[in-house]
Amino acid sequence: MAEHLRGIPPALPTYNGTTDPEDHVSTFCLRMQLQTNSNAALCRTFPSTFSGICLDWYNRLPNGIIRSFEEFTLLFTTKFASQKRRPLHLKALIDIRQKDGESLQAFYARWSRVAMAVRDLTLETAAHHLMDATNNMELKRALAKRPVTLTTELEVKIEKAITLEETLGTGSVRRFEPSKPPREDQGRKQLAVPWEQLAQLHSGARRTPAPTELALQRRSPDGRPQNNYTPLNDPIKNVFHVLREKGYNINWPAPVRALPHMRDPSKRCEFHTETGHMTEGCRELRYEIEGLIRRGLLTEFIHGAEEQKEQP
Image: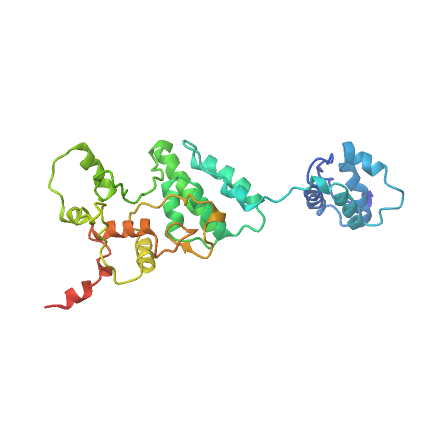
């Protein structure tokens, strides 16, 4: 066999029958490819990697049964097929969530190990579930702002978020806090105002309400708070595309609580990046758009704004 080997024989992995046989064959071939391509040399060298029950199996093989290295590896992988590593289902990735106090680097290492084991996982699906699973606001915003089309783009976004977290300290990085629509309790007289102003209202601070707040404080005949949304001249979906491209600061939504199998798969919301409802009917997105308009942004989408500009 020596005449078929080139250079110093490589350190070969051992196999005892308890791990994936296909992984062992791949590793063996990779180590031997610079040494020999001789069928006889491969057949004679391969058994030297066996130990335990695998070696017992080889010693019991009938003489003459191995006629080529291809047949040898087929016998080997078939015998130990029960040890083959099974691909994970997508649900295993969905169940991975970043824990409170867990660094982004530690979470991503844990998440990526599962992602690599999921069969036929596309980049789009991986990025979607990563954005859903992390509570790092910088990474969530980066993934939502512009979808990734290359694996390197995803890695760059993750690396930037990890570097920022390490620079500022884990406790200094803003964590994801979901935006919620105004509550509509009939038993309480709660004002439907932007969330950042609720603290002032409940603290008892006396001030003069702004005109935009007064508009939000109107109530319907049954006493419930009434959402007085500004009429738009374009579909909500188009408005969302613009605010995302311009990078406006909004509160991104929490994951939809309904289980995937309970949602309507024919409907998809771009704001939540999940199925179950349409972008046009998303109440949380409409609430965020209204907040931007009342801060003087997205005024080009106000219905009648162009007519007012044309008036002398």
